[in-house]
Length: 277
Image: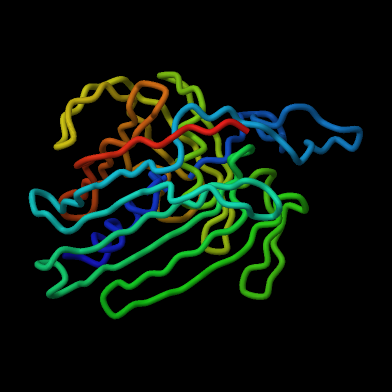
């Protein structure tokens, strides 16, 4: 398996697994103001606080996936809303993804990754992000706090400016699940991932029924396309199937690689308990 294929397995898990891990919406042709900002204050800056109605996910939600390289099972992945905690004096969701290679793949390339985000339960933006990667001989541990009020982050001793309500590699999917999606329309999103800010277009391509081990679902197919150098180049390599209902459950993700393709398929799931804020 090529190095690019190995990276794609992990990337699919982190996106969302938005990729699924990428989504802090900025509408097309609206200067530097995010689409989800309510109104501007007298300085021309969007106010900090916001409320995003969430009818999609809640505490206890869990998705279990099988990761496939072509027709070969490569491992498993999960996404889970672990708890409702207090962080920065605010109620927040603690969410996490894991990815593990199976015994066959582990014999020559072992993967054991965990990514966690602390997401504001009212505004659905991240306050803290961390990831712990163990992939073959490579390992990485990274964590940072996002100052959403000052719109900056300290990353490797550098202070970096951020877009309003910027999302991380995991919080993006949870946010986009709460938003209206319309076939034929695109969103432009801002993300901060591994020390870089990304501007991402997400196209809502079509409606399509898809069958996976967890069942048959009517879905919306979305495609993230970055406009900068990175994992997902402009030509687009990733497609995500989200259920066409208020839950927007991630059912299937596919990514083409140099040889073959990677797929992440929903095996089973448990819905969470919605909270009011």
